[in-house]
Length: 378
Image (tube, rainbow, N blue to C red; front, side, top):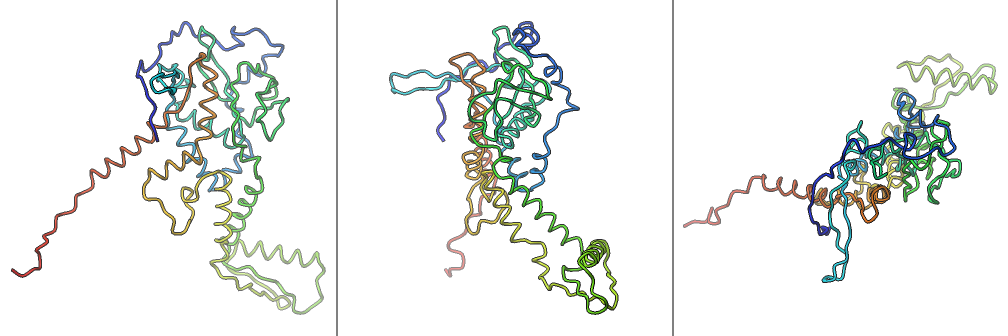
C-alpha cells in the first residue's frame, strides 16, 4: 500500500483553554426554538442504553467477534490532519500532513481515544449512523470536544429509516426532547446497520443456540411418548403429559413412566444433537452479514489459507473496516477549517504490523549449517 508524501510539522496544535467556549446552548448559538430539556439530559449516563436489539445481536458469537475485530482496527488507528496541493512537477495532487487539532488525540475528555472510537464504530455497525454532541467549541467556532449520544436513544422525526442515506436530520430528539441539530455531528454509514439488514439471521442464530443448549442439557435423548393401553388421552392430556415429561427430562437423569406409556428414543446420533452443521452454516451467514472473511471469524474454509498475518489484517481492513473508517474521517473533515482534512493513518498501522512480523522473523534462531560431506567415506 503506497504511503502518502508527508511534511512533518508540529505534533499537536496549541489550544488555549481560555479560548474554549461551551457548546451552542452555552453561548455559541442563540436559541433555536427548542427547550433545553434534551440538552440537560446529555451526560446523565445512568439513563443511557445500548438498545435491546443490539444486545441480542451481541449474543451471537460470530457477530460479537466480527464487531470486536472491526472495532480493533478503528480504535487502534490514529487520526491525522492533512492538506492537498497541486504539484506541477508530477502533475498530481500531493498530501501534506499538518498539525492536528487537539481533539484528534482525545475527542472526549472523559474517554480514551480507543474507547471513544470503538463505540462510535459500534453505532455505525449496528444502527448505520452515529451521533456526537459538540460539548465545547474553540473561539473560532469549531468543535473542541465531543460526547457520544447512543444511537439507540436518538430519534429523528424527519428521517425514520431503516435507510438514513438521504442527508442529515434537522429534527433530532434525545431521550424524548429535541436538541439543536447544529450541535450534533451526524455520521451516516455507507453500509446499512446490520440490525436492519437481516433481523432473521440474528433471531435464527439465537433460536439455534437455545436448541443446542436444550439438547446439551439433558442426558435423555429426544423421542416420542406413545400411549400403549388404557383410555386414550385427548389433545390436552397428551400436551400436558409431554410438557411434564420434557420438564423432568431437562432436570433429571432418570424418568419414570407407568405401564400405559412407552418411551421411544429418536435414535439421533449424539453428535447431531448439538446441530453442528446448522450452527456452522448459521455462523457463516452471520459473517456474511458483518462483511468479515470466514477465516477471521474462526470458521472453516477448507484448504484455503493465508501465509501471513499481514495479508489477513489487510483483508480485515479492506473488506470490513475501510468503509466505516472513511465515513468517520470524512465526517470529521467537515468539522475542521476549510482546506484541511482528517484521515486515519492506516499506512502507519499496517507498517507497524509488518515491522513487528519482521522483528519476529529476525529473532527466530537460524538453522545450523549442515556438513555436505557428512556420511561420505574419505
